[in-house]
Amino acid sequence: MPTRTARTAWNGTLNEGGGQVELTSSGVGTYDVSFPKRTADDAGGTTSPEELIAAAHSSCFAMQLSAVIAEAGGTPISLEVTDDVTLAPDPAGGFRISEVTVVVRGEVDGLDADGFVQAAQTAKETCPVSKALAGTTITLDAALD
Image (cartoon, rainbow, N blue to C red; front, side):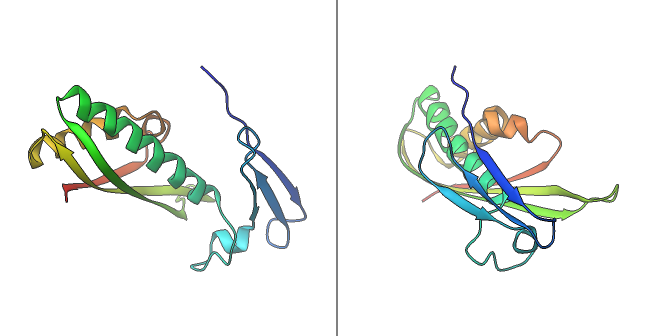
C-alpha cells in the first residue's frame, strides 16, 4: 500500500511565526498555517491540523461507508459527510483534539433507515482514520435523506 506525504515549512515562534503545509504526494496545493489563527474562531484564510484531520476523516468515512453499504446489500447513490474536529485545552497541559463529530446524510437503495445507521456505525468503527483517532470521542449523526 502507498505512503502519502505532506511537508510543513515553519518560520518563527509559535505565536508570531507561520508556515505552509504542502500536500506533497498529490501536488494539489500549499496552504498557510498559523497558531493564532488555529486557535481563533475565524481561520482567516489559513488551514489547521484539525481542518486537515476533518478532511481526512470525512473522505475516509465516506469511502468506508460506501463499502459497508455495498457489503450489506445496498447501493449508495450519494453520501454527504461533514466532519467537525475540535481543538481544546488538555487538562494535562497544552492542547488536544477533544472530539470529532460526523454528520452523514445519504441516499441509498436497498437499505432502510436502521440499516443505514448500522452501516454508518460500522464505517465509524472500521474507517482507518477513525482508528487513528482512537482515544478521541467520535459522535455520529447518520440519517437517510
